[in-house]
Image (cartoon, rainbow, N blue to C red):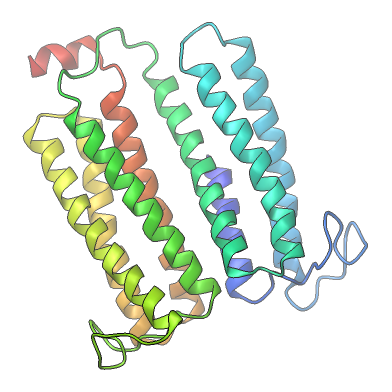
Length: 287
């Protein structure tokens, strides 16, 4: 999961540095296995090499999952999701090259990458809790709310990917209005304001789900993950404001993307932890 997250961030860094098309062919780069590394090619080539290493780890994970498939019911569904998402992501990696990093292809590539990382996170959480025999908490409400918050964070990320890849990052240079107006007129302004509105909804949902996890006595790990997600949402809003105020410096753009992914993964982990079986001692304590 850590390598997959790093691979996604490396891809984001490659694109925002304008190096996404330095290897215009696939799977080779300018017809060579190891091309000349000038002009930003090193980023795109390293991104592909890291993807190759990640492929080996995914194959090893799937092979192990097959060996222990009877140990728990979640193993095969989780492994199938990981395999399907990774295969689709490889296809999208080639497609983005052929489509010259068009905004829609970037959104699909980013969204599938984050769903893949989330599937790895879910597999890790479920594997860590597989030995717990006690049933999950009686109320399913916190799990549903946390999952909904993760879904909203995912949507916000995808809209943000479109804003970034379509060049609409500075379509609205005022805060909270757009170019001094509430009513927007251009497609770039519309998608920028849509991103801001969705981010506000995500912030409210994140705070609400965090509060719910505490008031309904969720397990400590759930409360920790939900709290981390809520705090990261505040950081995300600050990074977004700074990106507009400072006119999109590359480092802040990457930090914005990296933090958005962490917000999503925090709420995914919280939702899976909430739904997973809990240790008997923890269940007895809550009772």
